Length: 547
Ligand SMILES: Cc1cc2nc3c(=O)[nH]c(=O)nc-3n(C[C@H](O)[C@H](O)[C@H](O)COP(=O)(O)OP(=O)(O)OC[C@H]3O[C@@H](n4cnc5c(N)ncnc54)[C@H](O)[C@@H]3O)c2cc1C
Image 1 (cartoon, rainbow, N blue to C red):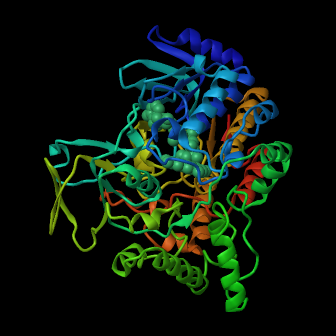
Image 2 (tube, protein in one colour):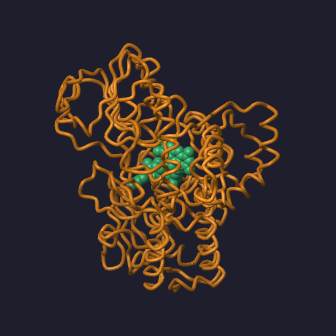
Image 3 (cartoon, helix red, strand yellow):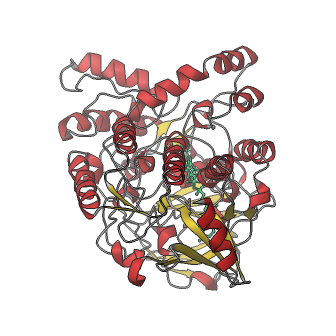
């Protein structure tokens, strides 16, 4: 392979720089992939739209942005030195700290020298004759590489709502995923927040602290659960550092890479008293335990799910003083955990404050944005600032925003028109040598993501090493592999209540009315997924065509 790479470098025209691999995106996936490929001796170029490394943690600077994963379960595990060097100050780190951590990683491993920032990739076209990819940036620059690795992020293509008059607004406005780099002051202002997903719930709690007045525009209430964050004292810090192998092993053993392992019992096999006690315990504990460490059937059996749904609904009603407002905050169209669970500290208590008003858009939808604020069907709200917490075009959104074409000029968007078709969520028939980290139908999309990023990257790196060692230059999945995997993804998802409701896991975003709903994640579990990937590698990549 090295020889042919040299050839391709010589063949390339003067305008197109040539590399062994091009990575799109410098979030955690892109950063780690760069590190591993460089270790392999490959020449690598990373293109990143943002002005620096960090992806999610570069863009989402809104007040309140923080982990739902335990900090020490989220960081990279590949360097013992890094693990020992870095101190997480809170169990659920806030965004500025996470970005500082990722900066340390970038500095320590000298990553930036191979990353081109402020550069959005507009297209990636496979050249069958040369067996390489030509990438064009938005500014028209070109680069070529044998391998194209997408690390574009499952939640990075943000969406604005399709509301009339959006740009007629005269006050300050910003999307949470495009938050300014300078501090934004809410004090004394009338703020409107649109959206009550995981991000909306985080930002609302912060805005409510200082705003003169906060109006929350809620379309779909979500079941939120207490985060119970706290700082990490010295003794705990020492213990965490001494137990990293156990922490990561626990994550490896769990269904979705978290430190929470589901209870094997059914919610229905225990007495109501035992169940209540268990739910109380989970509600009182930090993190996703109430979602990921709950009875094993709350996500697959509607009757089991109804028990935790009733419990959390009761908690909401207890925490909100006004019963009418509480009713608006209790979801009626889905059960607990069947959509992404937002984590909170005093979210429900915010609605007991005099300076906060909840507008239920199911009763009174937004008609339009007006120069002075927001007009619903029954009122006009004058606002000094609008915060759009309106989410992302999840998983496939960032792919759709790049013109990716494979063999015979086939567009990836067309290949996925009826939903993603992949093998292992990592490769696509007709798109040779393209690897989709954290892509659709990959276990990483329902995971404590860095745990799955490491698995994805290490698998991709091993594959590239294998090809180099065996003189192979082109890999593409067999058609039957892609068909079987896609079928398997839907079959494993069928049992889950996650697929019975509208959410980003189902590719549903009401701001994207033309997007065809289809299941985006893989629910067979990270351990099974890892085993399948390992089996594929051990077989000499039998599910693929290698030339
Ligand atoms: C607010 C928030 C909180 C989260 N909290 C958690 C959590 O607690 N636990 C958890 O597991 N996950 C969490 N996530 C999910 C999070 O996205 C992942 O954990 C992880 O950061 C994904 O890393 P990534 O490298 O795959 O993607 P990203 O971090 O999204 O990075 C992708 C990068 O690709 C770049 N890019 C995309 N398209 C192009 C293009 N065409 N050209 C050039 N560059 C491009 C983007 O600019 C971006 O920087 C959270 C997400 C959000 C939004």
